[in-house]
Picture 1 (spheres, rainbow, N blue to C red):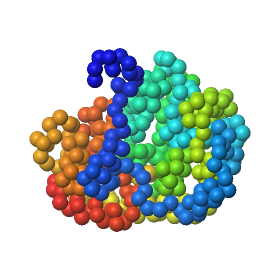
Picture 2: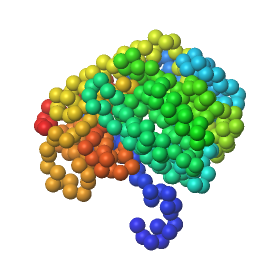
Picture 3: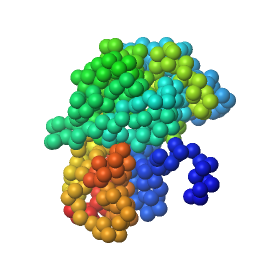
Picture 4: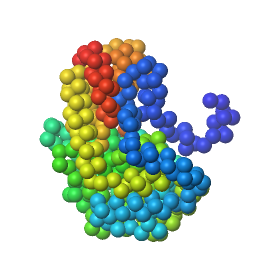
Length: 403
């Protein structure tokens, strides 16, 4: 980059890279590899939801919806949250429909952050959270989660380390449960500990609940908004992408107290104006799905989880069994491969490139989920939101990988 160009560009954009996850999808396409990197289903969305979108377009619901969301979708999202989490929100004043949960997170952060504010982020983290903090002007404070010691344990954090990350400049903590990339589902005890810190330091909790219905082993999803004392300190982020297998629709929302919602709506208005109107109409139908739909969703993914766990274990990976979401974090320490061909990258990046180029399977390097790349240098992430043919193809190709 020339000196002139460097002076003309924002310093914020220099502090992070393009998405590694989405880059791995591009590499998968380039090398005709099985894509177990990016978390989008390669099977069809529910027929009735697609039909609702087609009908909405035919019915000429093709112009702007109300900026903060079409009323049928706002009503449906609020009703569903009350039904599943037993917390009431006002659909007129406490919800903002956004262009996906990604924009909802960005709008929420820009609505609450002032210069000098800090955001607490657990790592490994979904890769958007670091850039979100930078773009909103916050300083991130990272707190590590540690891998489970055995199949019956969970990813964990040190309470003293988390407490030390909070302080007088803490504006919020980002909490993703069920978690991407680890599959951790935070327990009520953990949520209450985080609640006590938020209350002590007068901080928000921004909770990303996009995988709320993808749960295993009788695990329960508990929204932070449900914890005593947190309803008015929590911004709940959610969307249609994962639950209804429509990641390309980009329809999400933020539930928040009235004053916070007013600020989020203003930011959202000038970021994107509004989400696609016909897809909001279809979303209102989707959110009224019966409990049997969500039970079947979880059961289907539980089968896929077991399938990929067996594939990866047989291939030589150390696997960390997820309790939610549809990813498996792994350790690659057992593998030996020709690292000399990839001298410039950390071990996880070179391994991921080797896997996609030579074996024909795409994953995500673990370093993309950490502030310090070396902390993820022995990890890679796979996704199992794929049809059986895809998983079978990955199994066949991974048979050529030797530890």
